[in-house]
Image (cartoon, rainbow, N blue to C red):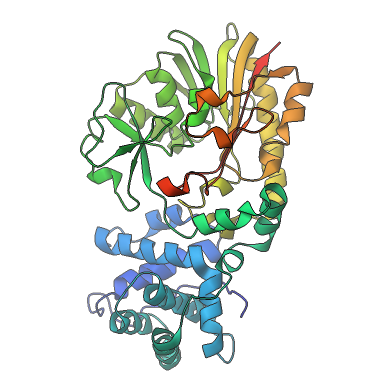
Amino acid sequence: MPPSTPTRAPRRNQPGKQAPGVLTRNAALALLAAVFERRRPIEEALDALPAALEARDRGAAHRIAAAVLRRAGSLDAVLEPFLRREPPPVVRAALRMGAAELLLLGTPAHAAVAATVEVVPRPFAGLVNAVLRKVAAEGSLEGLDAERLDTPPWLWSTWHAAYGPAVRAIARAHQVPAPLDISLKPGATPPEGAVELPTGSWRLPAGTRAADLPGLAEGHFWVQDAAAALPAKLLAVKPGERVADLCAAPGGKTAQLSAAGAAVTAVERDPRRAARLRENLARLGLDAVVLETDAATWQPDGAGFDAVLLDAPCSATGIIRRHPDIPHLKRVADITALAETQARLLEQAIRLLRPGGRLVLATCSLQPEEGEAHLARAEALGLVADPIQPSELPGLEEAITARGTLRTRPDLWADRGGLDGFFAARFRRL
């Protein structure tokens, strides 16, 4: 059964009279409609939910929607035998939600079925009730080729070409939420239960809420995947060095550079993201000059920078574990356009460097067009490769390529909970 675009259903109950769970399921339908119909990120859709919606319902809706986004192909395969014809989009979305609750989230059958029935138009209540009861009794995810079903074909083909058999492990890693990684401010004590990773980050179990951890408000740490912390680490800044952090928000890398003693200029063109960057630096008690401008056209005064960190805008296919809406938002054409943007930013980053200065280019993408394809361009523009050495990344030696670049993948560190997918390369300017 081909996937459909969900549309939010009208609530069947009057405000204040909803059956248990209806508010949550209506919110989940709204989240799925935003992603599938309008191609809007789920985080934006969360912000657009009614302010009166309780945090518990908001969190539960996000959990249900995220499960559907991760496993939409598999859920459709389970539903297909119980459907004679394609249902309307909102009914398809509700069936996916109900199936996700039954097969993935452990919701009791009576609760999952009853609440889902309440959020579909009345003419389809009987259909939804019958199908979900069959799913509860007979449905199973066992035996499905889940890795293929839950991965858009264009992503599967590019990953298979780039990573060979590892494509299955990558897709499998996307089926479950990622753990919470944090970077500690120097001298701070990690939260109870955090485990130190070989590269210096600290990890807590998936589902941990950073807001619930002691020390966040006091500025003892910031949230940052272990892979995302590597580009700034590879820049190896020294106290007093002048460093430009381009496309800097939300500020984890800026914080790393500032905490290392560098004089950091953080460039971010989006005013809202720049405001978030300033807020994070203030909470952490770290200093940086934050400029709201386009890094691609920025022309600073004075001498060139000692180092530049360019974490360029990209497709974000390396962070699907944390953002399961990404495979449903991106298209092949997006990769081409983003790679062109990255190339322009790379040219500008080189102009910002003093002779002998160093640059780290990074993207949170698994697409070679947004990573390895930039190597030849960088060398043609006068950069010399500065290969990453295995001793710099203990425990991640397998992520260092033969050319001395970094390529992390979600399936690496599987026994520790995985990693985001990142590409990073280090250069020096002649």
